Amino acid sequence: MRKNLGRLLWMLAATSLAVGVALPSAGASVSHAKTPPSVPGFDGKTIKLGVLTPLSGLASVIGKPLTNGNKVYWDSVNAKGGVGGKYKVQLSQQDSQYDVATALQGYDQIKGDVVAFQQVLGTQIMQAVLQRLKPDKLTAAPATLDSLWVKVPQLLPIAAPYQVQAANGFDYYINKGGGKGKKICALAQDDLYGAAGLQGLTFAAKRLKFTVATTARFATGSDVSAQVGQLADAKCDAVFLASLPNDTLSIVTKMIGRSFTPQVLGLSPTWLSGFESSPDQGSFYAQHFLLLSEGPAWGDTSVPGMKKMLADVQAYAPSQKPDQYFGFGYAQSWAMDQVLEQAVKNGDLSTAGIQKALKQVGTLKFQNLVGDYLYGSSAGSRNPPRDTTIFKIVNGQPVGLSVLVPSFVSPTAKALKF
Image 1 (tube, rainbow, N blue to C red):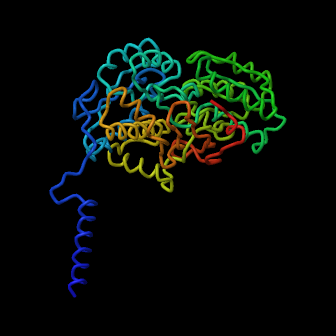
Image 2 (image 1 turned 60 degrees about the vertical axis):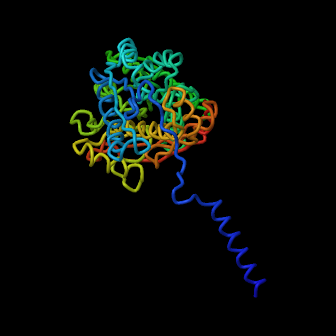
């Protein structure tokens, strides 16, 4: 009996020791991530993010809703306490007027008072700002889908690049849309945005063995009569289009005036909600226009990311109308949130801390609002999504868009390397 009692006491002591090692005592403190120290753009309570976007001028039809999307996402986060449940986010907006010099002035004005830039809209503007981001060691999220940004450490791109949109669009058109043997042409803005789209079209032409018969370029906001006439005279069956919405309207008007009705495949920035209901151009869009973009149709709550966004719209911007640019802005903030959460976890919201967090997020995820984006451990290992949603134009649908082909990933787009 004494032997058994001794054995029992020994076992109880051993068990108590094991529990004492494995569990903290009632009064023990559990370690937490350290509190980020104050740095430019973070005062210990509020995280400031910069926005360089056209809030006036022709491109404001994109800049305003996109920035509203940025804001609604952060309104939702702030209502829950902020990043890490503690730190609220404030956007510092500068009107770029879609002008490089104006954008650079805005950048210089706020660069010392933000931890990063939530949005920089415009390919030409992003390229100019990038030359200052590097020495300033700041991070920025481009509101432009050029593949130029994929491997740049200072940048936080999301979504499939324009090159992917063009490659998927023409793979679909040639192989599934009746485009074999058709005369394919291009009409593109005469800048880096247009060049990015043409790069994707050229890659598709080489892979799919078709020829781009005629390419016309134009300056944004200019008279496009000559360029449309050039394509009409060439009797193009299909036209690849890289334009902003104001130029899309002008181009389509000129096409109608020439009784020129090619199949138009437009990159995502070509479209503006409301075009579909125009009494003059609406039927042209419905019959002859396909939009190359990303994500689900507005209102498709079977997609978790769309359901989340619509709930936030209802809570924080109930008057917001369906708008594809709003959705992109919302996704941009979602990406930045994932980076800032990691930076707060690390206890470092400095410019170097943001860069460190970029290398630790792994894959940015959006619950299918846009495609997941592999970031990996360095900018060199980044791999953007390769899917494109092909939309047809339908009057009466939100944004005027109805999904023709969801999340299309072609062999041509898969072969693109950045």
